Every structure is written in structure tokens, then in C-alpha cells.
Image 1 (tube, rainbow, N blue to C red):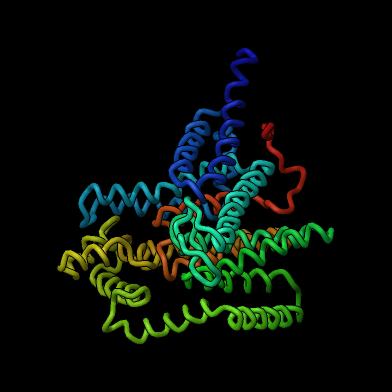
Image 2: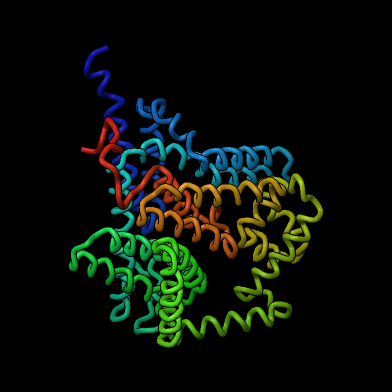
Length: 415
């Protein structure tokens, strides 16, 4: 075999690395471009010679087995689903990103590629953050929200839920870098970015999900970052900061009051945000009771929800997904589906046990985000959210990102 022939797989391997960096840069702001780059990366991975040598390492990750078993259950669910065939295939294609994530892990074992991918994501979120603050003064043509002024919704891409989900991880990553760097200017830089990102969630968005994720992941990551009795001081500091945020954000308090009102009136108004969710949860639990073991099949929630909601407008409004990933898997793929999803989340917490402090906090915070977001949204089903959670999960499972041992470089690092 000639040198030129042996170089071909190596070139595809490097090409896959570059494409993954591009994908992490693109999907937060341009989902379609992110999809194209992701597909090209998959092709490059399959053509390169890296997959066979790295696949054994992928199988050593506990999360791999939870992902494979969950996808196998989803695949089997297409054989007995009550949904039309095309609907089942749509759901199957969405969850196929779980397999794509495992293929990406084989490339992300390269430490430098992981770091570049994380930086690419941070650059994309930095663009969103700058756009949000510029939108206070002038409407931006690429922003979703065209309102100006302080204290109003500042959604730039997608919707405020997906933007706040990604911005929460941006804040968490900024704090991880703040922990790593010791120079005052570096800590100041990452600290300011973290504060601006957090304020965009608490003071510049109508969404409540972002506040839930921000509080929960920072509490878990913060408690993991300090030892012993310092945890009490950390918890006290976080409570004080939360009180300060609540006192300075009329928008946040309006969201809390509106949420409480929606809960109180959910019986009479099932079209509000929380009313919609509570109604869906009741419907899902009723369907689960009919088929608790096997579920109703992959993609069947829409069919089953429309059986309960016969009016066309209600069928469309309540039938797409139940706004709860735990219940989503349980209703379609049975109790085992719900348990495998829980096992996947638990495996993420388990994977953090041997990481150094900043990387441990990053992975614990991410796992907390996935667990909390899945209580109120379909984290692995909704388009941009599933991109974030599945592909960032692949990045974090492949190895530490913030503090990387030099021995972790692959034989074919990025040029």
C-alpha cells in the first residue's frame, strides 16, 4: 500500500474533525447549516480509518449502552406503533441523532478537537449574547424579537426556551474557565461573560425554563466545586444571589406570578404554557395506564393524543409532544423506555466522578440541565434542543475539555 493510499483515511479523519468544529459553530445560530455539516462529518467518519480503532473505546463508556439499548427499543417500537408509518419514521430519524452522537465521540476522543468544538459553540453563543444586548438599542434583522429597550424579551434565534437552554450552558462553561484560569484579567473576562449571559436569561427573556435550568445546574455544579462545610457557604451565597436577581428583575417576578396563575387556572385554561403542560401530563398518564409495559409504539403520541382530543385544533395543539421526555419515552416505548432514559442521565453523573473540578462541574451541570429540562420539555425530540443535548453530550463524554492531560491527543490531531 502506497503512502498516498494510507494518507487518505487520515485526511478524512482530519476533515471530520474540522466539520465537527463547524457544526458546533453553526447549529446554535443556523440549524440547517449545522445539519449539513453534521451529515458531512458522519460521511467522513465512516470513510476514515479512525472509526474501527476508536469504536472499542466508545463501547467502554457506560452511556453508550444506555444509548444503544434506548435506540433499539425505539426501533422495535416502530413495529407495533399505532402511528402512521411516516410519523414513526420522523420520530425514528430524530432519535437517530443518538447514534450519530456516538459516531462523533470516536472523533472527539481527540482532546484538541473537543476544545475547538467547545470554543466554536462559545463563539456562536457569544454572537447571540452580543445580539441580545445590541437589540436593547436597535432592532436587528436576524433577531426573532424586534422589541427594543431593557426588561423585554430578547430572543435572537429559535425560541426563548432553546436560546436559554444553550445560554445556561454558556454561563456554566464561562464559570468553568473562570475556575481554570488564575490571572485576574482572564477571570474578569469569563466572569463578565457569565454575568451577562445569566442576566440575558433572568432579565431579558419571557421563558421560565432558562431560570429553572440556570438555578439547578449552578447549585449542583457549585456544591460539587467546594469541599466539606464550604458547601453550606456556597449554598447560602447562591440563595443570596437568587434573591438579588429576583429583586432586580421585574420580568422574572412577572414570570413567576404568571406561572403561579397558570397553575391555579389550568383546569379552565389548558392553552396557557403551564396549563398546556399539566393537561398533557394528565393525558399521557392516562395513555400509559392502558399500555404500561410496551407502550403504544414509536411516534404514537400524536395518534393517542388525538384519540383523546377529537377536535382538530386541540389535536394539533396537544398532539405533537408531551413536553416531558420521561413521559414521552414511557408512553411510546413503555416503562423500560422511561427507565433507560433515566439510566442515560445517571450514567452522565457517573462519568463525572473522575474528572478534575472544572470538568466535573461542567458535566454535572450538563447532566442536571438534561434532567431538569426533560421535566418540562422533550429534550431529545425538539430540533435545536436535541442538537444541543445530544452533540454536547458526545463532546463531554469523550473526555475532559477544560483541563486536558497532554497524553490524550489522538494520532491524527487537527492541523
